[in-house]
Image (cartoon, rainbow, N blue to C red; front, side, top):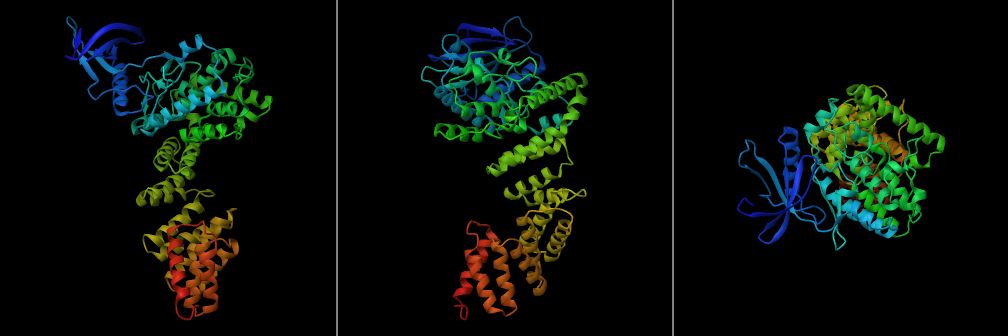
Amino acid sequence: MLLQNRYRVIRRLGEGGFGATFEVGDAGTPKVLKVLLDNYPKSVSLFQREAQVLRGLRHPGIPRVEPDGYFTFQPQNSAEPLHCLVMEKIEGQNLQEWLRDNQPISQERATDWLKQLAEILDELHQQHYFHRDIKPDNIMLKPDGQLVLIDFGAVREMTETYLVKIAGKRQGTRVGTSGYMPLEQVDGVALPQSDFYALGRTFVYLLTGKSPFQLIDSQTGELIWRHSAPQVSESLANLIDYLMAPFPGNRPPNTQVILQHLSAIDKGLPVRAPAVGRQDAGKRKLRAIGVTIGVAASILLGVAGLWLATPKIAIDLNEIGHDNYKAGQFATAESHFRWALRFNPRLRMAHYNLGATCEKLKNYDCARREYRLAIEDAGNPAAPYALNNLGRLSLTLDKDSDAAISWCLQGLELAQDMTLTSDLLSDLHKNAGWAYLQKARYVEAKSHLQKAIDISGKNAAAHCLLAQVLESLDDRVGARVEWENCLTVDPKDRRSEVEKSRELARQRLKAKGMK
């Protein structure tokens, strides 16, 4: 049979689920043809999504699909077309088959394979997709040692529609393989970190030769595996337990963190166990019982179970976003903060974090909006941070010193009832002093800037601004001291406002009468 006047069907490879696979020839090049055997709308949707994802990815660890690799074929005597997908043929064995003929893998092979798979997932996650069905038989080992992740039929895109569905307490499609998918995926709420859990479980199998079901403690529900893998160092075992943490917020926030841990292991540096792995046996048993009850409640209550879980999910997503923010991955951080707010719109710290991320992405309207949402609710710990940033934006972008004074004084008023970090308190006084300086109210400016320096002598911006105030008050000696402090205090502070002030300091110290 010749399809599309191009693909010659050679032989049938297998059949399972809703599809069948065939080997086809494409001008002498062997490829795999995947055919969907039913036309249920959901099956077609998943099949088309798989085609769309694979066409857009180019990585040696992902089967290649050409732009015209997806098509439909109308067989004779059939009213419905067959959906077809042609992809690169991966030579070799899947890891399930490979382990039947080999011993559990060594520490060296485990770190090599884990690095390869983390890099494959990095490619996938960077494109805002996650796999949802990582397991040994969905990973191929080529003769040259390259691993390839296959079967993207369950792949999911992190779209706004998906987030709305989850935030609206509606479960997503439940896909995955028992023993390898985490609790949130069992409940139909898969996340990118769900792939990390499945990856950890996969390596437990590869390192022990035992399926996860053979290693579960029947009393606690915990996976007891380390004694079955004596070849594994404590650091690598800790990393695998980190991947399998019960809650997604306790797993690595992104693939880069996994790769950093692997680099440390290669250098012989220690990798600590996640906090949950260091609990005593009694606490682990209580946690396992709690997780079991949570799953049972979700199953029994359905939507209501997910509703009860949303505060925890929101907090987890906010923490993951914060980790991405600190790693400089602002677009990914923004997605996680928006997810968190879908689950809990009143999570003020997520509003603040989203505002800070929008500011990094130069979306200042978003930043102002989120900072304003972050200051709502009495006793909210995000409020003083948001007020400080609103004051700074009023000064730097809006040139509105009156608004800046109002925001900063509100923040300082909150400080009377809250314990703020010295850096934040110092910054609130600094921004208030800066605003008063712009209004030529030098006495108030000097008072706030001196307080900022008294609280944190390393506040370079406060020294720079105080020098300007002292100049305006004709205190040339004091101004010289502060200009010098402006240049020397906290050289690691590279904020644009500080760099501009330092350039001004250099000019002033060279000026007549300031030598």
